[in-house]
Image (cartoon, rainbow, N blue to C red; front, side, top):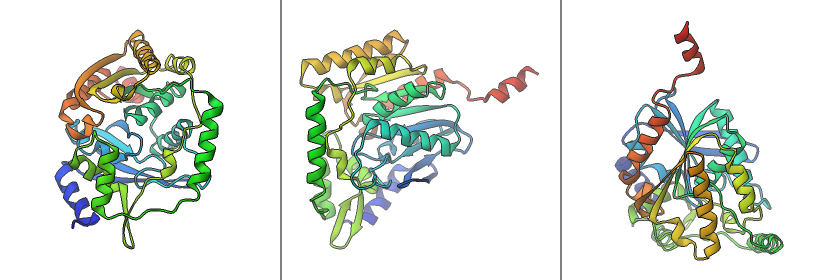
Length: 322
């Protein structure tokens, strides 16, 4: 039987090709954790993971990116090693965006780029609309930047409330490492076994009798904060950053079964194109950036380098003119 500690050491030595440090900052309800690659004054890149994942989702992609970039990948609240929200509190996209604003404040970044996968891409889209002056460029990995819906709001909110009440009656379940791995793979068929091990480095915590998942299972509850397609398009129109959308052949769009959902996504994609954004399709599944990062690495590099071939500050530019 492999212990959690043993697996963490194995995967860390196998995937880390450069020095990595742990990111840790206080928030009113605890802390936000994450990982940092690259030099202190490197080009700032914020990396945001998908729903129920953690910052380990970038373990295989970031080592393929330029070493002079400073990549900060965070565990969003309730994921990985970051603190859970206080009891009785719902998770929502606006709350995640507020968290990211706190992170950017702590990093003292004035302008930066974002790489967001799935839910992380949705957080990136909203953040880029609310703080357009801060975001230089955005890469959406199997994400559309927004998740519009026209589901009847009263039904969704009631389901969310009832789900929270039921959740509060449940006890935490303890697993063996092998059973936890099997559960993760069953819930995420797009993950390779190696990728699942990587996510479990920050996704499990040892307790008496076995391991527990570190993520807050309240993230599984109905999202009670919804936006319409019209609201999503209004936000999208406020994005000033150049946007690269990388969609996978076996990815997110195949999860949409209703024609209405496909209409939403095609409308959003056209919106990016109308604003000079790029949309590309690559072979692979929803976790292509983790399973086979070489599939998307050069696309990301080419796009971000074209956007900012040199990351000089305004002061540097002014000094060069003198």
